[in-house]
Image (cartoon, rainbow, N blue to C red; front, side, top):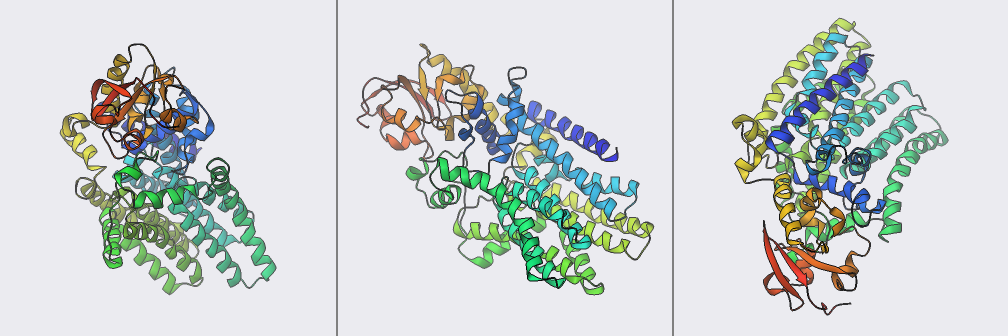
Length: 527
């Protein structure tokens, strides 16, 4: 009953904030809106099919939006305002609150103190933002926290029944964020090291490793196997991102991901390390205190290996970010450092559990009170960091909108939601004969999500998209909607199309935000 109440209260808290943020400020991170488009393409476009979910991003966040956006006929805002993503994020945010309550109860913290602790987590500004945005951050945080807590429980109890659950949560996390692959590997190493430390037979070590690894591999295989069958490349997402890292505007245009071109390169490993660590500490400085407490726990108590393994869990996500930053494929967005916040809270849970074995629950609760003060002060530091546009490029506009009472459109000229609401009616007005319109989802997805008749658009996920743009007349496509952008595949395929129709199309009209409509009047000369 307690967990149900916490889930309901925290879920309602996030939904109410999402309602204000989305419908009043019109704030929506472009990638969150694009994930709505991925799910939308599965159900409502001209060529609905499950593979339209896409293979560039881990698919679970978009996949879980499918049963929500299926009700768009009753409430169009689930799609055109992207609110389906907010509902999903709020559910994962509420679920994470419950995870911490369960962990704190295991640690011996009294109920009132648990609720205060959970509230401090719940109101952290970074956690709030990503519990109301349909990104992959909260699903990743949920499964990562669940995995670490289950590992700690197993490390204490040695219950083999927990290992399949551990593998399942870690594997599902890999379907949310790429960094979870590295964390899963570290968790697997932890399982092996703990088993060896218990001086069991090698056969038992192998059994425990398989109990963890097989469910994790099964979950990963759902994605990797799908890529192997559909894209003919089991590591398509990895190869795609490597290509995107060094892509020119022309080669970048050939992709279907809406977030290409945002990476930065820091050639020095030391500078890349300083960049990631510095931003992590700015986001949540209390992690220093948490690591200090963990270090003290390792020094003064037995069973140091579990503490050392937990400490190592701080490494993989940051290491992946440092590598990507050094290679030029990491965008300088603060959300990639979000793991620092749940990691600090999980460390606190583990330290509190260590106190329970020797001291009464009252002392654990008093220690939790001290931690809550430090974590709460760190929440203030998080808010200050999120208000800095030079550090929090994606989040700072929301902070400015809330503090000023203005909309994102008034502050920045508009985001993806405003773009779609403004441009979709203009595009459909130019389509006077209701002919098929081909466009690249990389650029036109806000228009698709706001169109009254999305089936009139031929989009990147359609199985005949490449054939259509090569021979539009053969497929009875009458228009090309093109953006003057290096990410737009039509712009890349036909370099002269934007200027004069490339000899096979006639200009229909400017739409705005760099979009133009052309009517197909002759063969393209391809195919």
